[in-house]
Amino acid sequence: MIETMLSSPLFGLAISCLAWWAGLWIQKKTGLLLCNPLVVATALIILFLTVFHIPHADYDRGGALISLFLGPATAVLALNIYRQRQLLKAHFLPVLAGCLAGCLTSVGSVLLLCRLMAVEPEIAASLLPKSVTTAIAVAIADSGGGIRSIAATAVIAAGLTGALFSPLFARLFRVTDPIAQGVGIGASSHALGTSRALEIGPLQGAMSSVSLCVCGILTSVLALFL
Image 1: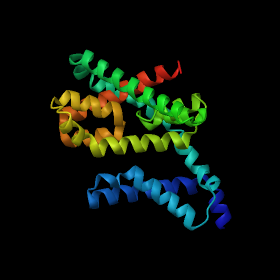
Image 2 (image 1 turned 135 degrees about the vertical axis):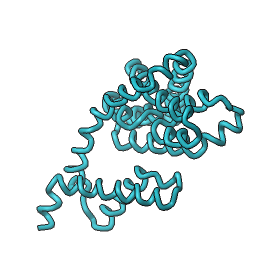
Image 3 (image 1 turned 180 degrees about the horizontal axis):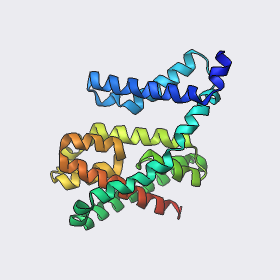
């Protein structure tokens, strides 16, 4: 019976849904930024598989089905730009310049550090899209011969770093304009940072939301030439 359960795709789906629900509950109870549902769910799944000695392949039968939604999730980002089209139109040049600078800095720093440290090409390809949302990052890593799991981990690390330290960096570098704050957060720490930007202010959240979409497009284009 256990073998039948493990061989079913529903096993991976059920574990993922339960872990995500637990992550949402924990974040709601604690209110801590570190208790992001995505991070908590990932940790719980790893812990569960390790404690009960369940092979990753058994979980991935259902987990792979979730990956099918990455494509539609990427397309839905266009809806976000459409909803914020008036805001983007009003600040088009600053947003475009800020996003382009953010993308070039992110991609350039990864390439430079990977070259200095003689990192293998597939690892470099996995780290390259670290500052865009997971749906786009995984697709970019796949096209460049990278490793999906490393790409997803790098995205989470970048997002948490931006979400935790963006207010500190804004004060340190005296970035007081809400548009600049939102663009900076969205360009460097995608959706996780945007959730933090929404807490700072509605304008910051809106600009961060637009920036993460624009940066996803720009990084995808840049990746074609690397």
